[in-house]
Length: 114
Image 1 (cartoon, rainbow, N blue to C red):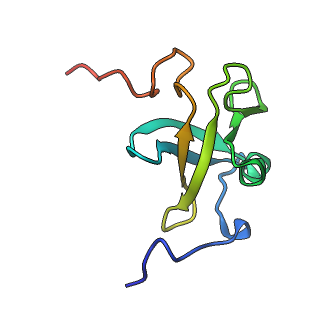
Image 2 (cartoon, rainbow, N blue to C red):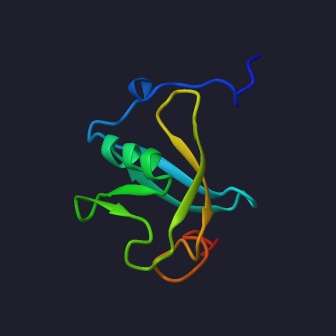
């Protein structure tokens, strides 16, 4: 068995969907709390790698967005992990404030009622 943390893929091997997107699960690097689920395209992923801060593709606005650009709540990237198929990412970050636009620490603050 290979140590997953030492195995890597290149950007060229990632599998983006038909819209050119790949899901990115963002987690706090210290607590591993899931902060948000967002989508990246090649450009936002490249900017994330280059700047070490998260960039995403807004499906609703059809444009790139830099997390924290208006709120100041940036996310400093510590590590990017890929799933076994290369079609999803986990982005481990050091958050500088809440992740959710509502002001909550995580976008997953609500429970589904039974």
